[in-house]
Amino acid sequence: MASGLCGCHDEPDYQNDIYGNFDALWDIVDQRYCFFREKDLNWREIGKHYRDQITPETNSIQLFFICAAMLDELQDGHVNLSSRYNTSYYRKWWTDYPQDFNLRTLEENYLEFDWLTAGGIMYKQLPGEIAYMYFPSFSVQVSDVALDYIFAILYNSRGLILDIRNNGGGLLSNVGTFLGRFIDKKITGGYMIHKTGPGHDAFSEPYPIEYEPANEKRVKWNGPIVLLTNRSCFSAANDFTSVMKSLPQVKVVGARTGGGGGLPFSSELPIGWSVRFSACPLMNAEMECTEFGIDPSPGCEVHATEEELAQGKDAILDFAIDMLKDLPLPEGEEDDNQDDTSE
Image (cartoon, rainbow, N blue to C red):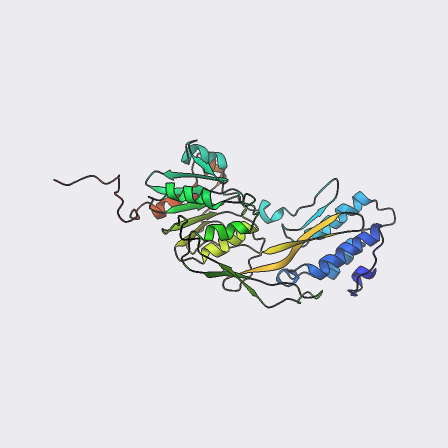
């Protein structure tokens, strides 16, 4: 085996050829990837299997797909190999599961093509005085001003449905921006650990991830919250679900999220290809790994079938509405649906 698979972790000078680039990739992942133990992977055997597929006649394009197939063994949506002509991506973290969501069904049958938009969030008060927000991507930075307006407009509601289905992640800063509106004291939402060496078990002590309440001048949400999730919630959306689930006023409804509980790291091969993979694990508040996804709250796993969605029915959203529809309005607000029986 070449130096990349020999167990030596000095910094070798990899040749810019088919073997040198493969060995560089194998070694970078070997030293820095963070979920070998959780996934029970024998990276040495995996590397040998794919290196044996290389011959002196292998060209760079063929090498790319051999390397991409090796990376797919990590079963991690944060893992990418990028060249000028392709970026590899492990899609099975979501493709082998029900979608449980249809945007057209939501827009037509629940929002009735009539909603407000601010900060990348679609929002509306649904019939029965139930606040609804759909946030499709954490790649959009939500501003405090946008949240002030949204929560002020939706304030007189029985509860909030916060829908993040199909949210593939993005900016972790959005987690703190949202959390600040739902808490009244500092909380520890989870933990982070770092690689401290090339060994597969070389990690630091856990570092707490703390969240602060929003400034007292900001508009906050003090009522119950139902968070809607599906398998396509990943990365920052997965972390958001983990922290939200720890709050007493929150119920998570829908399907298990897609995971992505590691912060990515990027490096480069001699050929110029870039590789990105999980290098820093995130844990929930109970010190449990979040890489494999977050389950709904007990009794709240719900699926929306393709047949029902095509007929205009969203079983996950209906379940959330039923949870909130009989709750009282905020104190001091009159229920418009209640008949006036005064003499």
